[in-house]
Amino acid sequence: MKFRILPFLMIAMMTLTGCQKTVAGATGLKDGRLQPCPDKHNCVCTQDLAERHRIEPLRYDVTQEEARDKLLRVIRHMERCTLVEADPGYIHAEFRSAVFSFVDDVEFLFDDTAKLIHFRSAARTGYYDFKVNRNRMEDIRKRFTAPE
Image 1 (cartoon, rainbow, N blue to C red):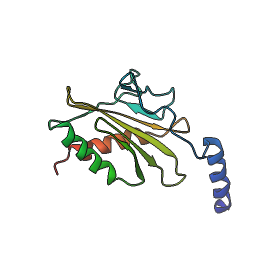
Image 2: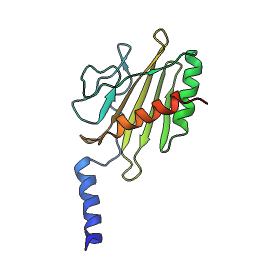
Image 3: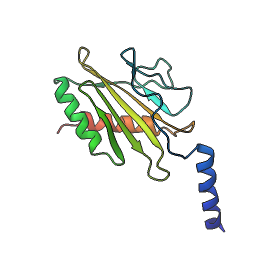
Image 4: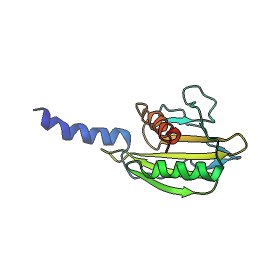
């Protein structure tokens, strides 16, 4: 009986969450900063003023180029990640969920004066992400700060 319910639940979930092909909407820089998070529980950003979205940036003590190269190595080794843009001071990657292929946009902005990497990680669809974006960014922090 429960196996008959599973396909129905999957279809209902895709319908309710808008599981369709989407494009990045609020990505890129605005006035030299990352875009603020929308009023949803599916985004974290180091430059957002709202406490529920706030997360600490990555710190580095090497050159910006060395930090960028290490960050690129980290994200290239992560599952279901596609690099969209990799400029000297800005990186944009897409992460897809394993089951429904939901897309999260992850952006990094380098501030070499402060030796910080600001980032924003946001789901394209839905309202809640069950802390997926926050957990991913903490995983990236752990990998980035680990000795090579």
